Structures are given as structure tokens and as C-alpha cells.
Length: 133
Image (cartoon, rainbow, N blue to C red; front, side, top):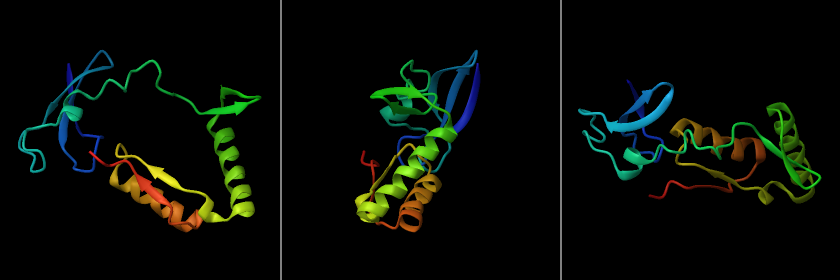
């Protein structure tokens, strides 16, 4: 079994933990001792909340709706569709008709980029997050 040192993805606290990996599968997690943030402790989410990684319902490619049905698409196709729809929506209804919602599973840097994108590229301050514990 390999132990991989990483940072917990559930909130912005930054607790360190070890992921236990065996035969390419994530099978457990344990706290990293000596870290000044969590000092060898983890909350329940950090300790037991890793089952989403190998869940069979986890999305592995973008889905777009064609004729009322969600179908797999390439990243280029999905991003082009999103870009075109955003541009059209902003043109018709203005930038404040769009809002962004970010995730506590993102890094602080990713959340920063999300709010920067919404403010600078889209032109709105309508941004929220789900970092409530």
C-alpha cells in the first residue's frame, strides 16, 4: 500500500492527510501528524469522505443535451457550446443575468480564478460558493 500526502478537498482549512492507495484504488485516508493546521486530526469528511473518487456515477467526460437527451461530448465541443451560450445570454440579457457558483472542493487558487473569471470576463459580481461546513 502506498501513502500519498495531500490536502483535504472538503474546505479551505487546508488539513493534510495521507491517502491510502492499493492496486490503483483509493481505500482509506489518515491524518498527517505534525501539521500546524490539523495537528494529526481530521473531521469526518476528511477521514471518510473519499468514496466519490471511484464512484460508478462519477462523470468522466462532459455531457451536453442533444434532442432532449444528455450525451457524452468532447471537451472542445462542450466548451464551445458554453462559450457560445454565455455570449448570447450576455448580449440578450446583460452580464448580471449570469451567476457563478464555486466549490469547497476546489483549491483557493481555483476559487480565486473562478471569481476573477466572473468579474473580469463575464462582467458580474454574482459569485457564491458552497464552503459552508
